[in-house]
Length: 367
Image (tube, rainbow, N blue to C red):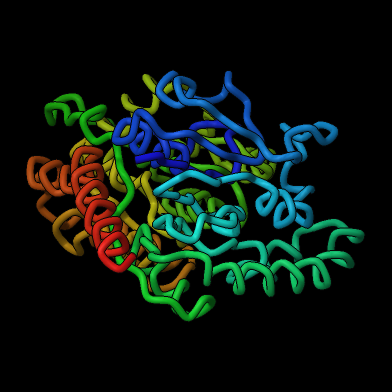
């Protein structure tokens, strides 16, 4: 069976690329198609595959300015030649599902989310953009939305990475979807003895406005409790300026430091709303509980009063109250770690393999 995997861009190894890496292990014979490809930014597992780029890759400074070329991506996708492939798996978050698959091929879209910048987060992105972008976004987004909704008909089956995303697929594309949680490398993390635990809380992730790192900083400024923040992003200077004497902003850190702090923190603070959220699962794989905003993917991975606690409003007061609740709980690191293993990479690969085989068999039976 000839297999094509389509991913929006390869400029780093984040959650979407981890999904592709797992699919590459499942299908070592697969070819990869993408808009932009930086071989040095991806894992050896991905680099072993034949990678074909769209014309976006040849545009000026595409490796840095790829998102600026969004208006050209529908055309670029439709120019990719997928003739001869029996199975097409598209990875959607940026535009990918709009390829033109062969009529007799099975097209499965693994959807991290319908494009946030034209759907559920359009107004957030526009609000924090420059004047020219704010003026251009409405007509461009209107065109992209129409194409994106229409291209959903080219997909045979949608797989959502969470129930949260499944609801968006239904809302924006009017399509049903099955849920398979993305792979988390849970075996890369481990708990430590109670004697090794620190006296600090931890926040990990990209420092951007929708993740609300400002709320976490203000909460710990008020309480005087210790908080360590790992991550970089557009809000890094603001977060450093906000940080009081008990808040330490480390910026981007190597994996060894991240793993160390996961295992030794009192709990992870997760104040934003995510589609799925790999960070809480990594913290739980380290045996540590999570204090999370009670919306989005975290509600599907964190078990209330067992592996963490939720706060219902994105406010400083709600975070402080949640911290107090957690500190009154008895925490069982072994139970937290065991729960995290249900989101492991091997679980994803087993479920995805069975799903693909079933869907391909169904289509072949109809031909």
